[in-house]
Length: 126
Image (cartoon, rainbow, N blue to C red; front, side, top):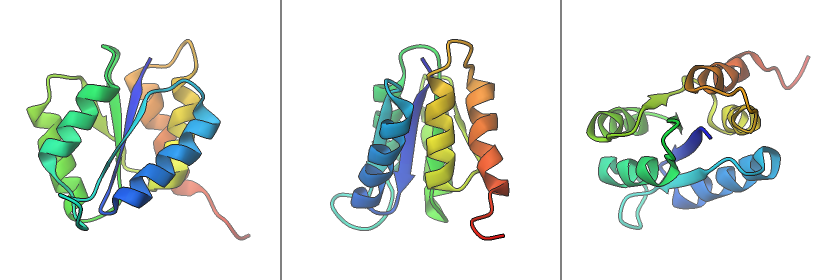
């Protein structure tokens, strides 16, 4: 099954997004990578650890919040031995979409990234 990693500057935010996505995504492995040594920030080694924890051999989709989270996630993907890809998507809506897609028997790394990125077009108000 495709795994997910949620990268946020806040550990609490990363954990909360994982909680919401898991409610929708059932058994998809979802790992938080939030904060940097208990402070606001992100850490490439912590993100790499989360990628390794979420990977069961099928690959991992990484969702990020902003700024240095993108840079550190990109570095973590390069450092990891897992097949991992960053989705260009809003973190919460993308995580929910990705979690639902990951539970499909036909899910692939590309299909989970694509579903996450579909969330870029969501409107909350008409």
